[in-house]
Image 1: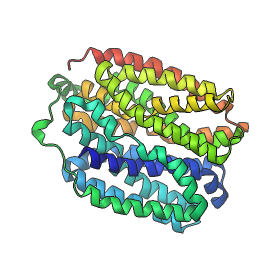
Image 2: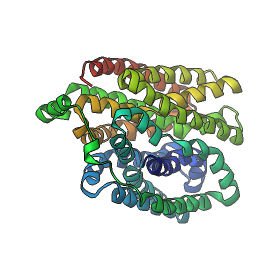
Image 3: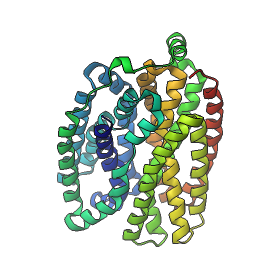
Image 4: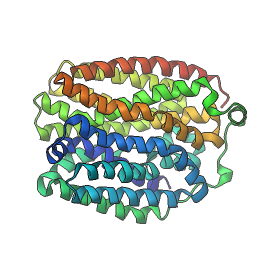
Length: 385
């Protein structure tokens, strides 16, 4: 189940997050749009993922993982097929907002995280980290640039559509964990039943901090290639460096998952936020190749472990029985941050003529997130295991 979930997660997230950055300049030319407008397309994916979170957790409970994930993969495949055949900006927004976004939500991080955590409750952080390890995301920049050069953007999106339809055979073998394997924290479950998740201030601190961290990660993924090209890096080398960041993010999901199991999700994400702040601060000085590569690797290590950590924190605070609901509500209430901040970064770039102001905002946001997650970690450690 872990391998099947891993493959579904990688196709869903790798093909959406991993392709948008390398396609951004081509999409701007194709649709004669600014970077802020094109970035809005990817934000529609984030919007759909957030809004559908509570519904997806309920769909998994009612219809099962297999049916939910197959519908999602089919929707996403249809979205990429629409991108391959259309040249209208309205179709672009429809593809990302109504097809790819819901598809990624139904076949990506949330259902796969619940699937992996259900099968391996004693090693939840590491299991979710392994299942959500973004291997395809690390390969997509270099692979995508090479494919786009050969078959152009429409052919590239057509290939991604075919990949999604092929994934349906893999998802056919998915099933949920036996209910007897799912054990949780009765005290936390009782607290969630009595007071409700959204009535607890710690939930809103988690939403603010996790939403900011997700927004920073999304902004990095969608803008890093353009940032490198603007600082004089060739497109090929920029894609190579973005791939190195993706490889580091694979290690990041595992390492942060390991940290979560040993020191708690809050403290793990506080350390990750500090690492992100330092790496983005380094990029603001336009360093040489090696130092830039080191900074990108650190961004990859620190930016990919938000979901495993939030899963561990939510399990500890709200109980396993309410994990799906807590993660769904987390995704829903982080929508204003994950939907608005990445395109705002694009518009800030256009307004100021570069990335320095964007980087300054990212560093400040990381500082706030580090403090908040340190506080979350202190509360988390007081809860019974």
